[in-house]
Image 1 (tube, helix red, strand yellow):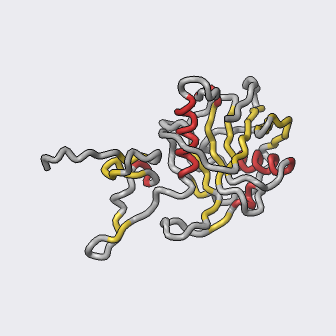
Image 2 (cartoon, helix red, strand yellow; image 1 turned 180 degrees about the horizontal axis):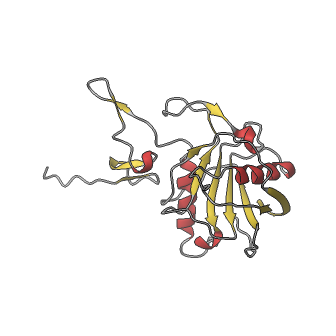
Image 3 (cartoon, one colour; image 1 turned 90 degrees about the vertical axis):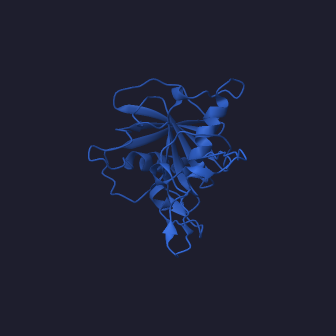
Length: 224
């Protein structure tokens, strides 16, 4: 698990990138994914790669890293700038970029959130598209995970609470593929009854064996 040390500097934020080539396993509390649409780069942000530590990159970002802009839209430009700076100094070998910040910023009632950059999988009720080039990837990068402040998590595998850290991360990575499926009812109409919170998690009425993407593990009491 990657992490970094720093302090908050007005106008200057340090962000750790954990470049992943695999998905992990774990549990809960995260927001629904957003399909990233390219936006014009304004030049309001700048990023500088400082150093690497194992598979962790320390990147300084100058600018506002809040989740949303004042108009309510996702603040995607600084994330684009961070990713492009990462790829300026690293090969395009990663499926996911996982970002921890050294500062707090509001994420509402969630711990972390996900930006889906592409989908090449058919049959899961998602369009086929690829906006990875907007983040500096030539088609390898699937998504960008914002874990928010590192202080929210236990980062040592030897300590209690590390499972929760892995759980949040796994939950976010799983947003790459769903839940988004619908099913056809007897009258040939499509139902979204399997889908629950934010339209991007399993419904708690679904017996999902307590999936990382919500749902529940229902038990039949045998009494109807």
